[in-house]
Image 1: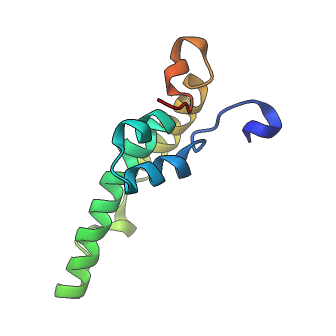
Image 2: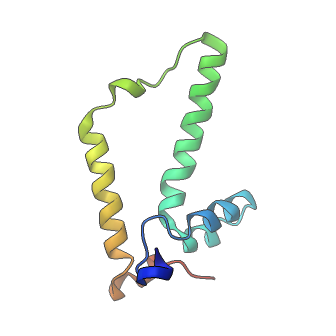
Image 3: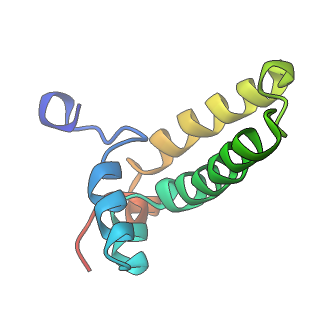
Length: 99
């Protein structure tokens, strides 16, 4: 999206951020995409715990199908807000950058 419009989306820098996480460089990961640190790590841990429960007990411990719709709307709203803020001069630290 950035190459076409010059605007950073919520996902810009996410792949580089995950790569930095995989190499243990969390500061650089946050510089590439802070949202990745705040969402990817907890979501991955939750997935591992849930997968373990499925393999051990045969059932999920997370009620994925009963997730309230308001949680989805709040998450989508935060993604939009993050996309807007990282393109403002006052929040330029949210734009992907090298340390």
